[in-house]
Image (cartoon, rainbow, N blue to C red; front, side, top):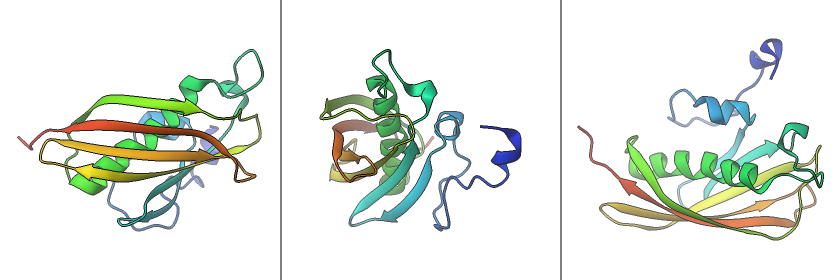
Length: 145
């Protein structure tokens, strides 16, 4: 992202959420928070940039996984209020390719939240509202020090 563009880039859109400063990985992927409703989940959009493409010309699975991670992390924080947590695992299923110039919109929800583990699931859709990938993960919640 060019420095001139960074001034207008609003990673959290017009939503009033308390997430603090976005980490570099969130900013690098030019993520934009679209919606947050504790009952429905967190929705974040990611442009599919040329830098994310594999030799086949589609978004590499690792970048799709990183996009999910950039949604699950903030959702974990919003749902638990615990900034210090660690992802235990993430599982992805890829349904169709995403191409440069498209936008990947991911919605993630909390499925279960216990005292130490929070389980989340989500789906990624392209601009045509077609399912690109689905994922689920577990985060270990760590108590504040």
